[in-house]
Image 1 (cartoon, rainbow, N blue to C red):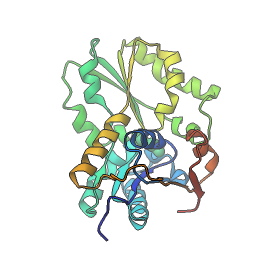
Image 2: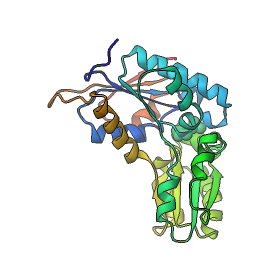
Image 3: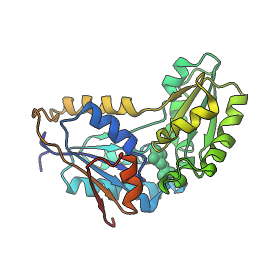
Length: 264
Ligand code: DGL
């Protein structure tokens, strides 16, 4: 099948977090139809092996291709850092990935200390190691695995005391080291920004990659002649989840979107 401009943009994530990316893309490209897969049944990917993450990514990609996705946004740092090279090799559809924004953080830091909160799978990946090596050697990167955070978000426990305690445990040591930039290296974490700000205050810049991913998606669609240029048409947005739809619906601000509970 030849991808046409009217085909949807496909997204997948280990769960609900990639909706933070979907929102950025939808805001920049309101003319596009979209399909989103929340593989919440298998979350968190960050604790899985590279081989398992590749297998989940293949399954998600095949589902999106069966639904005629013209481009696939891997809305998950863990899947990008572990599987995108494999996906690009195996499929001809263009893939957009998301990686922790440590390069931009390296450019803004004055204290020469940046913190990164990400999953074990992302921090252990070769791609992350490669990107970190490109940062000015005088900059110290304080890595922290956000163990438990994805689980709590998937359960809808964003504002719980447990979340607050975990965030304090992970962020206070970085604050003691005087970081002035914090990279959110997981697409679930932008939903924690209000709680994070209460802990680290306003002097630390919080950096995530959402808007960069949206711009990149636009550029690549444009390069491939795949941007949907139809003016003022009604777009469709389907969200598939293989777990409970309530959390997904809440994070999408209960907008009138099609949310489908289905095993995959
Ligand atoms: N949203 C995924 C990411 O960006 C969460 C990973 C996980 O499921 O552990 O890394």
